[in-house]
Length: 93
Image 1: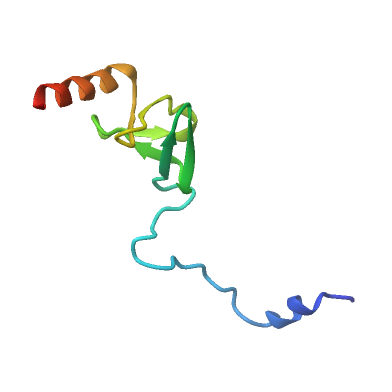
Image 2: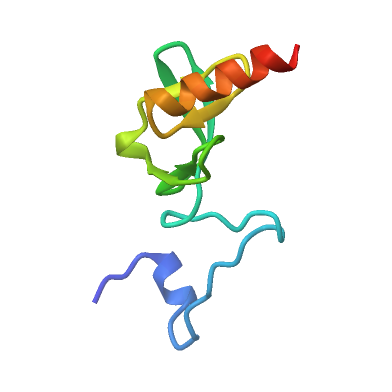
């Protein structure tokens, strides 16, 4: 049997469990993602399954994310939530 050299290194050992690099790195594929919002697009900084709405606190699956603010780097679950946030910030000025 011809095995690559690296495969012989782990033979007979227990599999290594992957742990986060630090305690703040808790998100995974099923956890909360961290995004960088761009004009008409976003960039995934930390992979995850969802992002949290800045107004309602609801989880938004990344596949359903349609509304965000580039300047504030916030995501919104729907257009009314985006408008609500915009109006509340304008009143605060």
